[in-house]
Length: 246
Image (cartoon, rainbow, N blue to C red; front, top):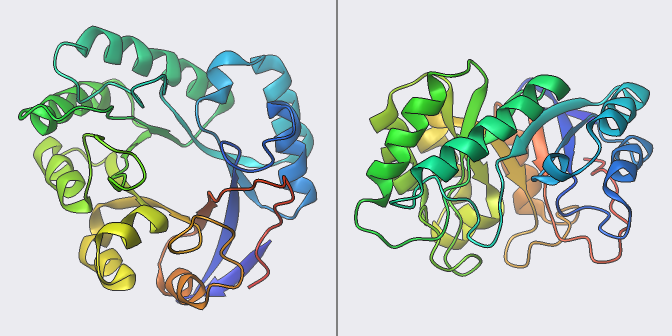
């Protein structure tokens, strides 16, 4: 399903990491199409599932795969963790291989949980190496401390600093409305401030990460963005998510 905002038609993308958790992963792709979504994005599920079956589901539905994560594991990635450079490289190469096979537009490079003073420098060096290996979009996401304690990127300011330090056209910020709203005072103003460094937008209801369908502030925020695709990443405890009909 698509709608128009800021003079542009926008398409909703279903994030299978949170939506329809009661269904097996490949079946969530079918469910996304059935519920009216025009694109899809993964967490790291594709790294541990049958790629042939995933390919079949993508072809069957015609859904565009916007992106997928590097391996999450217990630390939520490791690209910013000092001493984990070899693991981060291996995780990126594994994600890149899957992205190339499934034709995913972007790879979300997870930073990991660390409070090391040099964590942003470690992440920037990793992203520079990764950006030299592919033209695909590489995304980093600030995660609010109230949601993911100890994550290396706690604010969009940190993420913007890293993107600037890397200086590569294919390294951008993933702007998740839930996390940004938890750390900034004005969602739309923050988006406008950093929009040149933003590569993808995700939405959920403010405050509780539920469905945003009745959240007027999120609806108006989405209408004001200039992104073609809007990722839908909210908690779907009942496995009954449907595409917003704004």
